[in-house]
Length: 388
Image (tube, rainbow, N blue to C red; front, side, top):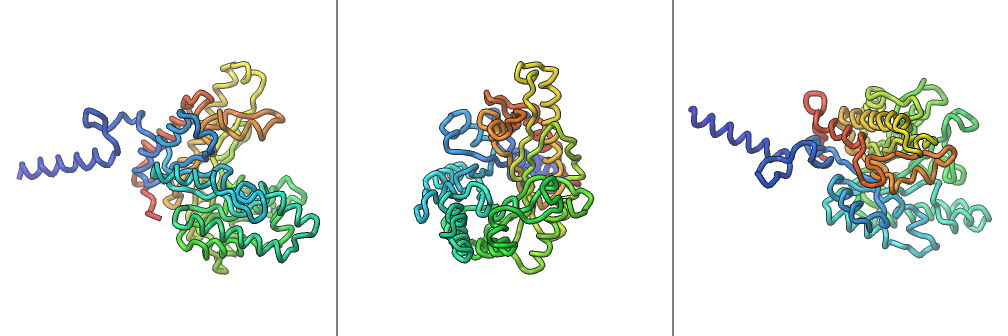
């Protein structure tokens, strides 16, 4: 009996070692601080992703980190309509295909971004609508053709699709009551959302179809100016009508100058969408800071609090995702300040410091904070995601 116990214990030890992922030259798992994000997330069946671009992949350091740390990727711009069809009827598949090949080579899942959005549309489309050469009926047909063509091309290769992106207004808009906004709502009315999801489902029955938006981290007062509440009710009603919306994407673009949220506020939102029978994802996480004169001059008294606040915000989103079994992926919108969209978009005042790595590809406190979350998380409160 003693011998059997020893054998059983040895076998369990071997299973434990194997479950921790790759081993080092001495046959032991790497030290926990040396394991990649994707290796640590594997315990939870959680995908760790990043937005990537073709230009940045030309840099060896960028490519190495994108390959080593992440098991999910999102095309930052290559799948947006203006990139895919800059001239009407002529598609430029090259950049998107190249990123699909990169993901396949590195055994990475792909989030498709984005099928329907009011930004980064081709000029021929928006100008045609504006000057009347494209009618509302033709516009609807063009949208159906676009969704069907793109989704069918990548059928079976895309894990999650951002089908409709940023359809709702913000409380600081006029009127403050949340409403559907932008090019598609103005020209096709509210029915375009249901149409888009049905067309995407027809083109690929197995991809997970997401509604994706920003400022969706916490409920407000559940009144007319609460964006999260508006989207929750919109999706609830659409799903009740049989519209195939599988997932809710909370972008997670945060800033250290704001109050932001705690883990349980974010979890409350994810849980609410789970209760509708949906999966969820954090889809575009970054945490920007104002680049004051002191920060730009290298003053540690100004830089350090921002780095600590950034780490806290990254961690809050990770912890909330871990606490909800239906939160399938956590994607950062770029992982290095060298290739972040933030400094080019937020210029007055200037903002930056938004990612997990600095401009020299050195990991920041935020990187180690979410790594620690993955290390410490486990049963009973954190359970592996169901396979989807």
